[in-house]
Image (tube, rainbow, N blue to C red; front, side, top):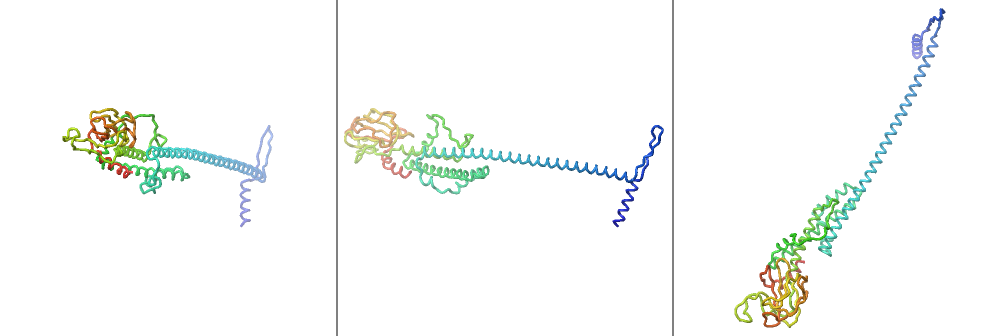
Length: 380
């Protein structure tokens, strides 16, 4: 069969390339050019060989060009990957710097609030285990950092711990404010005006020192709640501390109580607006609570007199003094020595006349002096 195929191919080639003769006439001469079948086959073979060589050459060039193009594409891809990686590193560093700066601002806020309002932290605020509310508050912040910076788990945990601590501190401030509010009510006073005066903007000023937890100057809502709770706690505790609680004179008994009595000069029925503490001439007199001295001088019936304002309409008055130890405008603490006992004014002997007034209305000082110290201790 192979011989048949070879013979068939030979016949086809012979038929395709028969012997040919060409007649050429030039200048009256006739020439005959004979091209044999073998020569035609050889020429065709050369042509096919040249065409094959050209095709191979073009194929090689195409392959080479394709290879170069592929290498350029791969190089461009690698360059793009390097650029993208560089961008990710840059963004990572920027996010990391922003996160660290945010944590620093949050920590600064916490430290300022603790130093200004609390001082030494109690165990319940410092080491208390976070509850479900703490975890729920801290979770969004932790997830936010972890999403932006997957490698910054430690930073996320720090922020979560900060948020949990702020929540515990807020609850601690709210508890102290509630105790102070209850204590003020037990003494028959209303804590509402104390809070209202603390919120008012009258007589305030000073250089601006903004507090923020974000780069744009905003304050995290949980940190704002903490600030408001601490301010409320301070207002109520300062109001409680301004309620008379210190015995103004160290004496064994009270010679005349608050209310009805027989007047020592006329013997008739009279109203006594304070307590009388008898003692030796020159005995020390003490401020019953912290406040500001608003009057030093003489008043009719009281003789030498000192008045101290404690805020929220509360004032204490000390009468029949033999000497003064403070001046108008001076700030005093409860227990500060302010005067000396005497018998000036309408007096029958050396003693202190002590009054407590709320909005200039006299109140019985005894409940304050007897109950305020215990209430103060309970509130703390």
